[in-house]
Length: 156
Image 1 (cartoon, rainbow, N blue to C red):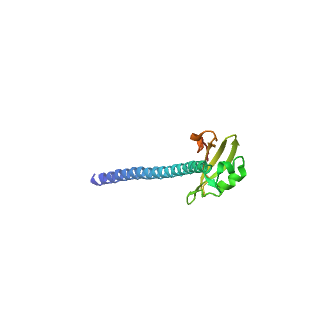
Image 2 (tube, rainbow, N blue to C red):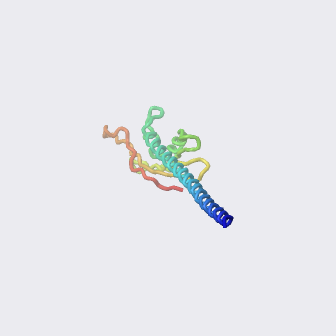
Image 3 (cartoon, helix red, strand yellow):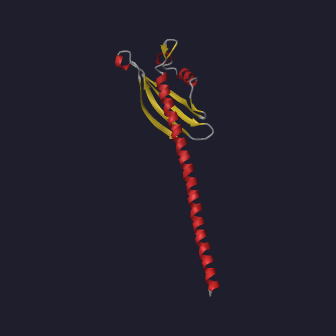
């Protein structure tokens, strides 16, 4: 009778050990998935921030000067020239993370700018767009122009 109890105890302990191991493996698997999700969310957030930083930088660029003349006077209405000049800027946020201007579209005293943020080597990008309104010559309070109306466009 005593040896039968020892066999049952062994079986119960083995079943409990198997259930505990299954719970531990499931928890570790879920932790790995959660870590990957968090890493992907961090990358997407960094890419979006790079696109926003690029949009802000491009908006400020219109107010800067080259050869004593503001960029909004030198390049207004010249999307190719403006794209080339913006392309010459330092667009790297950190190694592998950068922004680039994808499109400039002029409409009167406003230019629509579409800017992309991306991490080198992965396929995820974020694009934002915004409008820069160049200052009018009549209003001294409007001497710096304005960047407005930015929206997130797409994500991959």
